[in-house]
Image (cartoon, rainbow, N blue to C red; front, side):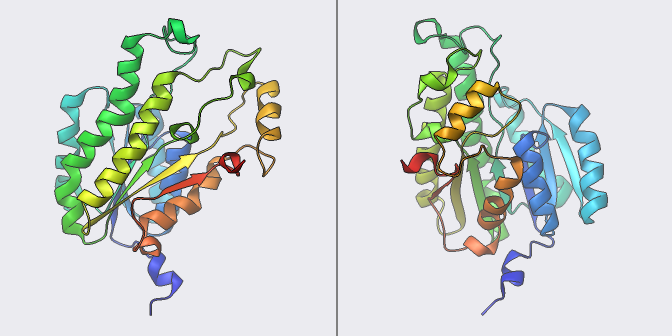
Length: 267
């Protein structure tokens, strides 16, 4: 029987993380690098990627590289798998973390339902759902060959739950229909892939709850009052879930949605 240390050892494995320069992406990269995994980080923001790659490589002694890719451009996705193979000759873990979350200044996004636009809806689904389908499809051969293939899709509590719009009253924040629909679709895509790609590749979801990033105080207080663990999440809260689903700790786990939400969905 293997020890926990052996089950978490990811030495020589390669993990690809989309949205790798983002808040949660960085935390997940830290977790897997600490376990010994080499990393290929994908993001649009080269200014944040470049120093992160150096920092992670120096801190954990693993090989870290990056790709600058806009996942709204479907034509760029097949090249990602080719680059992973060219640079590392293997791929063991794919984390579909990049997401279109938008901002309040994007037309047809954070607004009342009647004003939400089809154009912005399509942008959200392209990044949050279609790119996951396309990238997973492109990487399937490499993941299957690895013998340890694991796909982790980063969803949201709003993939399963409806929003309480009272949380957002008096703020510029909102909860667009396209975001919820894309994450709900991602949850079902996870279940579908978990049976279709079995037994060679495991496919699971992590659904974060609210993560504190300087939101208005009134929103934070309302959110905390609604959360059994009485706080919002930090990026560090996602390290354990990532390590579990990426490593052999979860080698008999597939098709599951691990909610890291402080108990938000338990009410």
